Length: 281
Image (cartoon, helix red, strand yellow):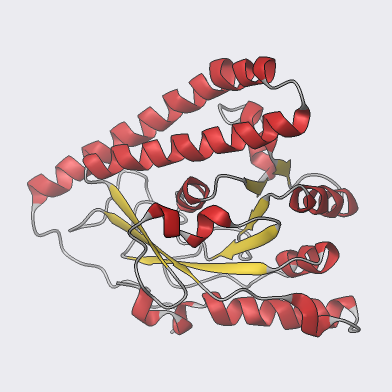
């Protein structure tokens, strides 16, 4: 399958509809930027004044960001840019948010495939206590830098410190989101899975919850795609398939490298594109 597109190229059937969705996409990204600025300079500083305890601030701020991401997705849904659905481990769609298994997760790691730019937004919108390991470039000057510094873990710290911070976050009840590929997938398939999530799960002795991000082609949001592109004939469909938990219990007594390989092989089996053909709808 090397070199073949995961989603074959389709012709645009309705150029007017395509133009409307493309315009909606541009508006959505501008809207996201404005929201990030307001969050950085008004909302989070206000929360800092209200919630003086560091852990309380972090907990409430994470809930706020999850709510804002849900609102952002709602705006994209109204503009016919993107829609999201969550499916349980039996493949049934979750229609009642009270039954959403992602909203009650705690002290675990969520791993997911990484087909598009908006994956982390989609997942955090469903998890009110989400933590992430942010890419180092977000530590530089941009509209997200202040948010990252206040709430999240950046990848540009020494490995031992990174693991300790992840363990502390998980122990505090947070859900750590990790993309094992380390970067967005190519249109021709997934990148090699890294063992970081498995190593952190072993260190923290916590479960791993795989989420396969299915749906349709994310052209325009994939790695190396021009941002002005859009799915030819539909809005972006984000279908989050929550898989069975992976627990490290059967790795007790194994050396760390062997245990990490065993865990990441299970993650790979849950998230590999070739194992989720039916979920790429």
